[in-house]
Image (cartoon, rainbow, N blue to C red):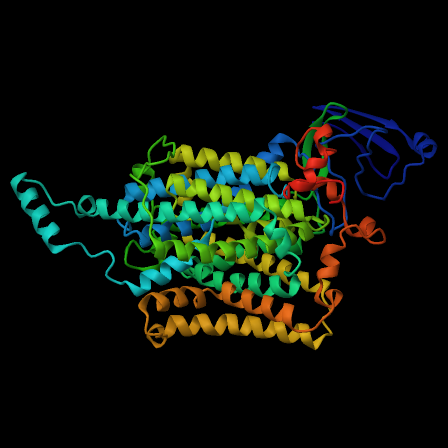
Length: 615
């Protein structure tokens, strides 16, 4: 290993991959006036030399890589791989919920296609969002908002998966005549495909409406009425509601879940001031040692790998139950190993892979509700991401473009048969705060990884086999950090105002209470019209939808100044007094890739999703 080290004796030791030279440099040191700490190894930087591989010590509050920075390719791959792993559990959970809704719980072939299509669309949408949409480091994954109304509808029709007795009897006779065993999965598959086709048509139409809201600039108009007082309760209710999904993973083995969470917190927080020595190579200095916050940036990935390894050891040594009916069974690393055998090597999602597309009004109404909820969530995520990345809040054209991309890709997701739309994942925003890596190039790599996962089924199957409690522990850290980031938006409002406190508190309390009532006492809501009851249950059963709408209504009807409401702070993105200290980059990060001549065109004033001289 090559390198130069200085010790307090005044000697310089040069290590050249095994050859060691020593010389007195005390006089040279006086001439160079290089500060030196006793007993501390120093690796001085050559003058006027920039090396991407070395990262000098930075303040604990600073980002290691900013939004527009481009880390070395090998680091981008590792960072992107970490973000991909963090969001796998969310995509997997939503895909499994869709399989449950369409009655495909036992159909591994359909489940594999659904998951592959979900991963593929997550990758495509992330690529578009990162460099065309809002141009922030945002991961786009399967939207749970679209599954929530479906689950409410499923609760109303509990017999949705029951097959016609005549069909079962006819299938049994055919199996006897053919001297084969009756395959109920094959008998049920036509009904499963019919259910998918129904979701497809409804999602395509909802996605196009979603796209038009962004492309026409309507969402920019909404931003005049949506501020922190609306965003914080709405997004916070999602974080509280997601606890249920996290519990489903963590309850499998609370010990391993908390161990995974604890490891990530120790590496990211308790050891945040420690810089590990890492051997690197540069053209200027060859092999040498530099100090790098490796453990902090890869905290969640290291925790996942460690938890996965512990589960593997416990599985091999027989310390875990092999009873498939036991809750702790999914702690085993081989609990879902069947996915490796059932997954195909290659499968490219295509329109019509599940048959002819259909449409149903009831499903469409549920998706429209989810569309507005998703838009509200995404606006909050954009601002939370900007705050995390220390850049100005996104201007109207960036928000419009981001919402338009989400809507366009949601329509494509419906065309391919995902059964759900795509939306911004808050957990990955929280991971930026832990890793301090905000480069959108990392999320570009993450999108490419997801496309590969979606096309090469065997690769994605390996990571889908991550034990549930390990995923649960990672989710605790991610959504815990994200919830804190959401709450940080409160700094923009006047917290001494009883108006703001009353609105936020009421919206959160009602957003928890009313959905609990609908879930616990579903038969008490009766208007005399069955269709109306169904729609109202879907509306009132969404905590973020109900709490967000209530907060927005109160915030815009109760008297209050825009400064008191925090809207003035969000709109004042070019504050010359604070911009230099608050932000590490400017509004230029939101400018899409376009010819310089086109940027000066007057026609841009009529295109809401492109910047002009006034934005």
